[in-house]
Length: 430
Ligand code: ATP
Ligand code: MG
Image (cartoon, rainbow, N blue to C red):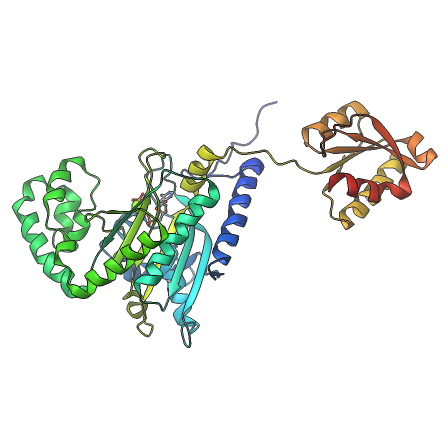
């Protein structure tokens, strides 16, 4: 048969998670919620669409994200510029301000979900991807920076992941950054000839960002550039040392990376990334830091904050390298039947089984026992229940163990009175 319509495919860089893969996502999400609960973090949800100016102001005009990665469009109904969130923090902070969340106490919050960036798709880099975003709002000390980092170390442990390394840096405060900025611009001016297009454009608008380059030709120049870390005053240094001391207390190894600036403008003091060499070119699984100026910048009453985001696709990729997926069965009990009456009885029986917590599929439609059993087997159900004319006449159902649900494999077909069936199956599955 010829196809009447052309196929509509997914948008490039935007992935489907089919049932098997999605089960893995759900497993991760459940684990993540438990992990966050252990630290007193509560879930919150903000919209995917926000006013564009939230991100241009919050993330910074001269950043990769705002300059070239945002999905921005005009709302045709009212001419407003809207943007699909490229990250969570700006929206979380907007919501916290709008609802006065920090009025009488700090807030530990998290969100999980899709974010959108118009990047070149490759392994670990997609246009719709997912983040676990964690924010501690209204807390200023190095204790909370360290707690967040230690918390991530615990997640790696929970997932059985090793080989993720922690890099940290301090971006200091405004005045320190200004002094460093002047020195940096001088350095960049001396090496104008090797700056690429981005570098030249950002030299005066966001010189720090020039050092964040992935251009190999600029690495040596970036390595030799004056380091912000050397411009830190006593208070900033004390904060940084406070974080380091607590990481040592917790036995979390780290490396100072004085070149790390992170991809967003709002950070100050502590910044950190967890990197691995197990994900090809996309090395960073988790990135975060302190952003004490953002709440005020977005119109709130000034308050400190610190947070991080984990890329879930990269995390799943990594997790899979340590703990292979185990396919989850579609159901626990698969009911096959023969004849109209048996089919109707099967539907009612399935409801009773669901009442006691079992997952049940009733074979849909009519088919030979053989083809129904094939389906039952493909569903990976532990138990098949057979309802045929003979069974109904005798007031029983046949039960066949397709897979050993307990230690003793039991392949015989059993005859169980219909009245006892629910209790029998419940006992078998649990
Ligand atoms: P990168 O340097 O890899 O572009 P980033 O600094 O832009 O990362 P963040 O904005 O800090 O990334 O986002 C937090 C995390 O989200 C990253 O550490 C990474 O794990 C993940 N991530 C970022 N961009 C993508 C993407 N396009 N596709 C999949 N995951 C991503
Ligand atoms: Mg990026």
